[in-house]
Image (cartoon, rainbow, N blue to C red; front, side):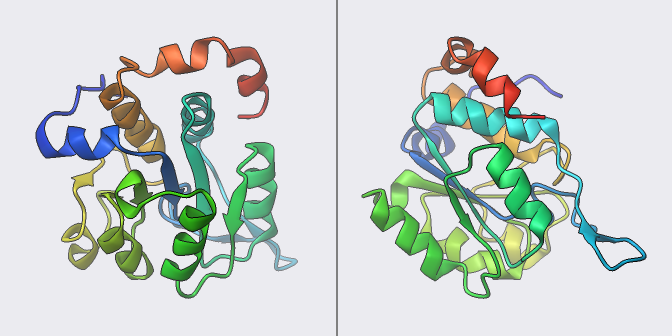
Length: 190
């Protein structure tokens, strides 16, 4: 993984305000492929890098939520493993649950970041303070992004974004926010 540069200008200003990160699942936390076995059970592959990133954000006081069109049990299981407090599955309209979560947390739109990779994410990307996508996103999605990760979905894109946010908020490479809670946090990332 590349070294995190300290963001500057508009990107840094947006990242400094983040108190909530919402994530799409398929194509962001996974590579977007859906694995189905012979019994019809759906499987997904998640990156441990992203799991550590979510724990680092939580250690810095930044809430994490997942809003996905998926309704796979694997998503709920992984969210539970990572102690993701806000999980919305089977979301056809992602804006409504995003608005509900940020209202519950008492956050203005500019205190929220969202990372998504496809058309259902556009409404949230357009509404939040820091809109992020991944390299494989279609042009219509990329047009709404303030930042496009260098890492692809399922390969550490959320880790890259978390490092950027933490660096902008003064945590250097983000390790300082995580160091005091590392043993407990690491246990929930695998």
